[in-house]
Length: 370
Image (cartoon, rainbow, N blue to C red; front, side, top):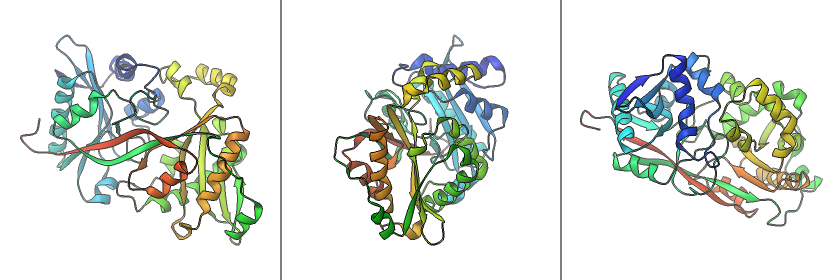
């Protein structure tokens, strides 16, 4: 096995193509090629370099890939210097072993103490290996891998950390009462919906609530405005305005809680192999009505001072009402930590069930690790 840093257009194409070649296209949802190219070119908002590597077998065939990167913010957050890796796929345990050895060498050279991943590029962006629900397809910004992959990590000495679940809610499976205006008034808030024409001013507001709400989580690093802009690029194109719910304080007008849900375009991303070219984006624009039957809850949060007051529950009830009215049949959610019972209740109360189990993996970097 040989490790090669991606340094030309041919190798970059091989990096992009590997998951489409390894995994069933109806189950795995590839990362967008534009995201990978931004890492390669150094134009992503990530504050430190991102190196792309390939694993080749003795015949020169690509059998693995990964990013190799670091983030001082994450090191400071939990006091352990980590060699991060992400966008990680391998065809077999032999390819994985070669990759892990390379990651160890990179980590030692950088003075790191542990390997942590897969994260693309941080745990609060896109992360994890799925540990259950292998028969269920993934979705945009979520992991999918076959059942043998966790065993490869664990046989190589990695241990699980930050275990979580995604959830699936069948819309209408549990009767939901739409909140009355007086319920919002009693909570001291007013309900506001997203506006495609105002996303440039709305996104910074959401970012403030988001960072405040999640900063206490162990692997969450504050999202910068540039990172938020990259993550929400094209939001106005995809947004169903009734699925971006914002609670504002009645007195001050400040945003105190929000839920962001987008139509699930995962089947289209699967169809095009992650290549959302200008022509493909036009095709999506013309056919986007087909993708308004399932949705993805991207993020939700409540400002710390207003947590525990039922505000998010009010928004969730309104969301379920709006999904039903919009003809949506299913809501999938990004990962919720197993320790985050409050967020999980926002889905279980509406008949939701866990979809995929997921985990990050970590391993100390030592001279003898393989």
